[in-house]
Amino acid sequence: MSLLVFFTVFFGVVLSLVAGSLNRVEYQTLVVTRLESPTPLRPDDEFLAWVVDPNTLSDLVSGSEPATSFHVGLAHRDALHAGNSSGEELFKLRLDRDAARVATLAANRTRPKDFSSSVVSGLAQGSGEYFTRLGIGTPPSYAFMVLDTGSDVAWLQCAPCRRCYSQTEPIFDPRRSRTYAAVPCAASLCRRLDTSGCDTRRGACLYEVSYGDGSATMGDFSIETLTFRSGARLPRVALGCGHDNQGLFVAASGLLGLGRGPLSLPSQAASRLSRRFSYCLIDRTSPSSKPPSRSSSLIFGASAVPRASTGVAYTPMIRNAKMDTFYYVDLIGISVGGARVPGVELKLDRTSGRGGVIVDSGTSVTRLARPAYEAVRDSFRAGASELKAAPGGFSLFDTCYDLTGKSVVKVPTVTLHLAGGASVALPAENYLIPVDTKGTFCFAFAGTESGVSIIGNIQQQGFRVVFDAARSRIGFSPRGC
Image 1 (tube, rainbow, N blue to C red):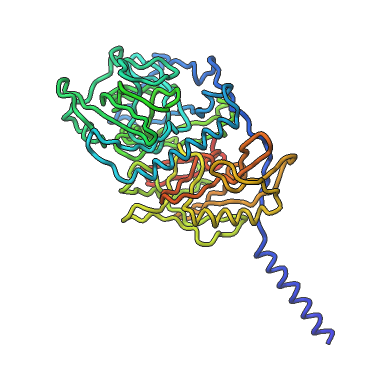
Image 2: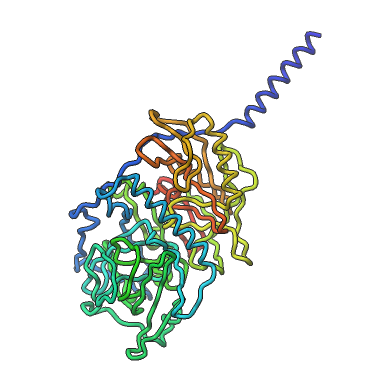
């Protein structure tokens, strides 16, 4: 009888240990930091004040020369407004822009082709979140340009202006550039535009791009030279010279499209830049004057791909014929607390163009199809049950916590599983983020019914995100800044 009791107790303990191991939740530490205002860009900041040395210029031309690489510094758009608004006000504006952008992406499934119609670009509310400064023309005139993986056509405001919004730098005047040339109506470049027109008097190609919030730019489609801070100079880049512009583009002179279409900068310069680029984004509140290893940056060319593949999670780059500007990947699952969340799989349907996930620089918050989001959210809530819930939500967030008085907390891990065996383990600060100065933190994912799921730039922070079109893959390298 005592032997039976022994075995009963023994197997009971074993079963209890097994059940405990199956239910064990993986946690990581989140350092609790309050929402702060971004550090403003100073007039003497190198990011603002650089002027290229003519003796260091080198043209990047196609032909027998080997492809090259160069770096571009980036800053978050909030740095232009820091000091005028509180961190909480800027963050709310960021979420408003985010909602408008996602609504625009959802509407961008069909593109009308006549010049008078409104073609909706990926950018809404001027919501490209990161920008750089570069030279336009010869000699170069300097301009802030928003960089956006959800847009193709590059454009900037040009004099003479029929209608222009306020920008930081002087408006570019093509009459002062030796390298400016209008694109003829009959040129193949003109036919590549989604919407084009022709000024028959001058024989000049006209472009028009409209945005989801009513913003728009139109003018002459042209060829011009771009100069970067490294001294790299890209001649004969097709871009829009906008004489009639309106909307909420906020201080930037224009936009530099990094999408997959034939008129984006990576596509135009494919032979010169190895069909590769990558970026690494630091938190928006970080000052641009930190050492380069801590700054947001964009790399064009072969150097965009990390030399050591160890630690880089690569997944196939997928083309969606219905939305060919965007970079798609297949999301095959998400783990929360070390366990796969059932029913989460977002693969692109090649026929309908629905499903899949866009990797986007201009959307801040990751969006998941509503059923997938609710499953992930509920798993996170269960794993974070010891945290004090904050009443209500915040903007588009429905899962928030009151971390007042805390310096560190434990939160369930979150890992994205992509096709090809790629797993992207997110740092805690990439998904539980401060939304005010009171200690409120929210789970930085949201649901969508639009059919367009997106990996946003908050979740990308700290990763070098590699767009390697030469090998049709997208990579995520942790601690890549």
